[in-house]
Each structure stands twice: as C-alpha cells, then as structure tokens.
Length: 293
Image 1 (cartoon, rainbow, N blue to C red):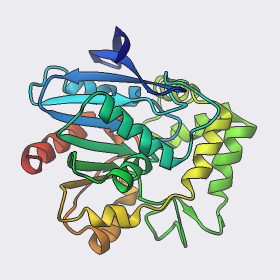
Image 2 (image 1 turned 180 degrees about the horizontal axis):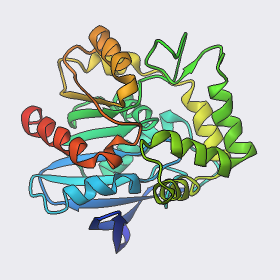
Image 3 (image 1 turned 60 degrees about the vertical axis):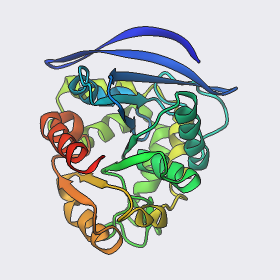
Image 4 (image 1 turned 45 degrees about the vertical axis):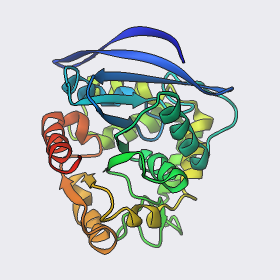
C-alpha cells in the first residue's frame, strides 16, 4: 500500500513537529503524497486549497502530533505539492473520486473531513458522490460550496457570473501570464501579516503546482456547485464553518438560509488556521470534543 516512508521535519517560526510523510497509489497515474500525525480513533482528513499542499496544515499536524484521540492526515491533491502531476484528472468530480480512493486504500473511518478554500469543493464533491456514511463531521475553512454567483460582493462565492471585477480572469490569466508576481500578490492577500519569510514559504508551496494546472483548476472550480450537497448535511452531520473576518456576515447569511445548525467562527484572513493556529486549533478541539461522537 505504501510506496515508502520517510520522516518530514516541518518548521514554521517557533513551530516544529515530526510528521510521517507517505505516498499511496490512487490511480495508475496518481501517487498521492500525505502526512500524518497522532494515533487516535477519530480521523481528521485535511484538504488544502488552490495550488497548495498539505504542508499548509503544518501547525495542525504539530498540534495533534501526540494525540491519542485523533489521527490527522494532510494530503497533497493531484498536481499539487509532492503528488503526481499527470496531464489529466483535474475536474472536481475526479478530485472527489481521488478522496474516496484515498479513504478506501487507507481504510479510514470515523472521518472528520476538512477543506480549505477551493478544497471545500474537493470535500463536497466527495460527499455528493459517496455520501456521508463514513463521516463524523465536516469542516469548511473559508471556502463556499460554489465559486460563482450573481454578485460576489453579496453572496458567499468567489466570483460574479459577469466577472465585473475581473477577479476570475485575474486568477486564471495571472497563473498563466506572470505566475510569480501573481502568486506573491495572492499570498500577501491571504496573510494578515505578510512577512517576507511567510510570503516566501507559501509562494514556494504554490509554485509546486504548474501554471497550467493552476489555471485549469481555477476555471474548473468555477463550474462546481455543491450548494445542495452542503445544505442537505444540515441536521445530519456536525458542521463547522471557519471564515475570515471580512466574510463573517456573508458566511453567516448563507448558513442561516441553508445550514442553520452549523457552527460559525470568524477570525483573521484566509490563512487564519496558520497565522492564528492557537485560536483555530482551540475552536477545532472544541468542535471535535463537543459535536463529534
């Protein structure tokens, strides 16, 4: 099942942990890289966002490194991080299938599934196709269930259908035309305190994804809509939505209409789980302890 094992030392600021780094064959063309920490009966499966790898969750891996309650898995999706980078396989339908294959190959159970940013589309694609029978909870980290709506200034979406502000075009073409500059600006937007060290850290992670795959996954995400999938989980599965401060009202408005039982937490900017790891991990601990059984 495992191609090989190695120890990966993750260091960020004063944080350091030893997490196990592994690979598993998902399809003939995809060997998926992932990291693990902890040894508990509840599985916490973390999916990163657009162009990022499981390394972004280094401070969650550190937090749970000695846990006897939770085993954490942080994956690199297809084309990202250290996972395979084949020519095909970049639809969100396929990414949901990849998650199911990962769960099946590692025989995971009692899963709390978490997706950040565009990673919300990965986890909701999985639920749409395979249901929630293996899940104990779902965590959505600053990522709506669809990317495009009528007005991105009022709705919980990334882009307006008309793209009046040019944001969809800027992400797709920025990835193709001037990747380093675009990615640097993107990372600075994600951080509340964009120090040179932090910006370089996340730019380096993002650039492990090719320009073409970055553009393709942005565009394919624009066609995904898992609104009904997420709404239908309300009352059946514990839900935690963590939003950046500026998206608090928008997220709450959506939840009131579609998932009123969800717990809503707001903090920081888009990378709040890294920058405000203590606060984020405390909220995650509370959710896991109080709602996941």
